[in-house]
Amino acid sequence: MTKNPIVNGKLVCVALNDSEQFNAMQAEFAEAPYKGAPTQPVLYFKPHNTWSTDGAVVEWAEGADSMVVGASLAVVFGKECCRVSQAEALDYVEGYTLVHDFSLVEQNYYRPDIKGKCLDTTAPIGAEVVSIADPQALTVITSVNGTVVNETPVSQLVRGVAELISTISYIMTLQPGDVIAVGFPGQRAPVAKGDKVSSVIDGVTKLNNVLGN
Amino acid sequence: MKHARVLFNGSTLDVTVEEDGQLKSKTDGQLINEADVTWLSPIAEPGTIFALGLNYADHAAELAFAPPTEPLVFLKGANTLTGHKENAYRPDNIEFQHYECELVAVIGKEGKNISREDAMDYISGYTVCNDFAIRDYLENYYRPNLRVKSRDSLCPIGPWLIDKDDVGDISDLKLTTHVNGELTQEGTTADIIFDLPFLVEYLSKIMTLKPGDMIATGTPKGLKDMQPGDTVVCEIEKVGALVTNIVSEQEFYGDKY
Image (tube, rainbow over all chains, first blue to last red; front, side, top):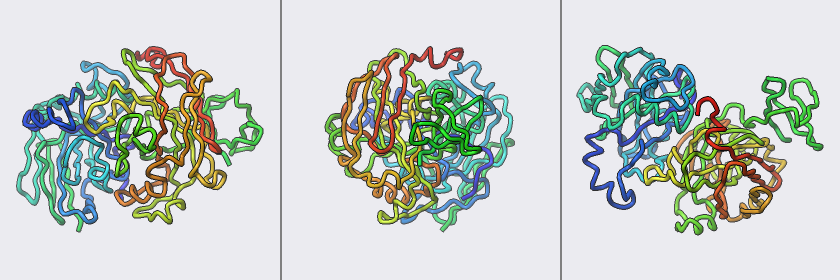
């Protein structure tokens, strides 16, 4: 396991934030067990055993037939952020990076997905924290073995960067070294043992990982 | 031995709690009166905080849930932790906030794929937490969601970490909660559905457990709403009694409100 130099507190991830997925799931949201679409951001933690780095080999889940990956723009906090408005939210950001979320196939969203999302080394975080004037203008592109599998503009997210920072800061105070991964593609990409996964925000930053065996 | 962390004269101090209740500095042996300190979370570097939902048969029935066939585990952020005798807040404009008195086991040694038989070797000791929940904020997504369970100050913990061997058998410890002196929750760890060795085996099969990780093992029945001004005492036999004062959101956040 590799200690990540960027995140040292909380890694908060936002699920169901791709508007294509969110809209496509409306009928499913209406049924049990959900009985209604989410009214708030759907959040989960990737705990410290999951954190790894750019270039890291991501452990294949013991006994798993399949795994998936999604990439997200990630906000890194530079100062304490407690109960901030959307208008001031970006002032608390030190910079941005990328996060890969490797997991088991997402079956449903009813209960916290500890089995699927908390596997060792499955949250590589980029090596650099970069300044960006307008995070909403970025696009995250992910390739598996050189073939593009996802291309998600940040503007496609149901809730944007400033809104998420504000909402989350009213639930939990964010500290320097905390990270929010703002949204993953609804269609997570299947990966196999030994696959090379590369994500890039053009001209800004990139993140490369390999699946173990 | 009981290990605590306190603020004393502006610095964080590691202390032991003596038989007479006095605190003894681990640095220089100085004896300190409890009245002169602010209690902090006893875990200096909190790792992953696991908490169990519906892990007491009587509580599951109270919430009209069938007992789970697999542990319902959720994670909490370290922002939730606060010390003994500190404030926890009630959010504005909600209907129901309840306490949850829970036995917490603290991991003392890193491990993966730990068997039930070896599980207790990985526990360093125990403490008490009050895993508050805001029922109004429940939604059926990653339930219980972070908005319910990961709020600032809403997991008081302490007063201390007591060594595992000082507690001994944890299979029938009495738990009580008193609100403003009135007994409101009473149970025993004998009603736990998934016991600690099971949970260590279960979690470590998924992921590596590390020192500072904590497992809050769930709460028995006896839910009651809390209001600012209330004092809640969660007590577990042989472990400790954790006192929390409920304040309003405005009082808690002060200038940041």
